Length: 127
Image 1 (cartoon, rainbow, N blue to C red):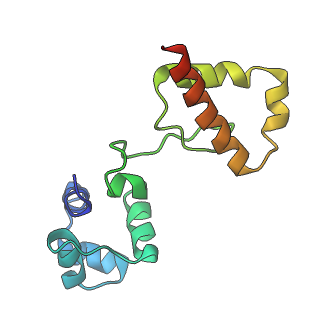
Image 2 (cartoon, rainbow, N blue to C red):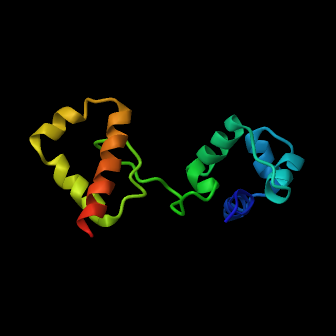
């Protein structure tokens, strides 16, 4: 589904007109029409405002995921929406280890690397 389709679907799910959405974002109705019908893409700040307004991610808006709401791991503070249930279970087992508690103090990039490592390890186990 395209950005235009997702935006229109989200807008309509709230019962909003293009004018309503335009008012909330501080843009014109014609701008919203351009997003929904002419393939126009909003500026970064407007895109973030749209994601925030609909409580979703930009990945969802652009069709990179079908999960409308990201799943944030409470310990990592990172999105784990793209992990399979088995990968989430493995991650939870890792979090029970004593050394993991120290890991939580590491920068965000390290936490994202952990999630990628979990996915790689789990996919290797399935072979």
